[in-house]
Length: 82
Image (cartoon, rainbow, N blue to C red; front, side):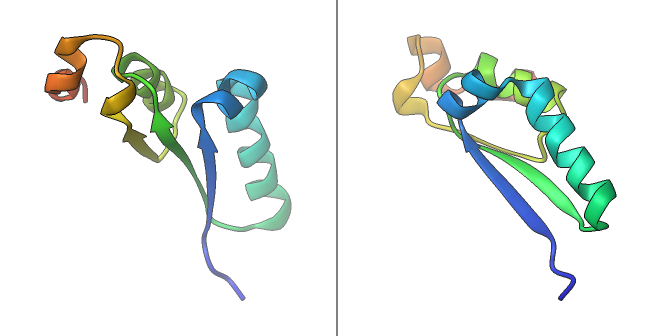
């Protein structure tokens, strides 16, 4: 079987492991096993945390706006970063 793998992490897991460590773990597994892999940051607690995930090379980001720190984030300033 040669199906791609999606590695899903939530904000607390990223905080515990570290963005760079997650990226390194996935990159190492891709090389070792020759499998297509992507990292998904699920339920990012803020736009800022989502930006950090994007910068770290996460392929998929889901923002949980119910956890947003400010009213501006809840309104959706996510379009300011791409």
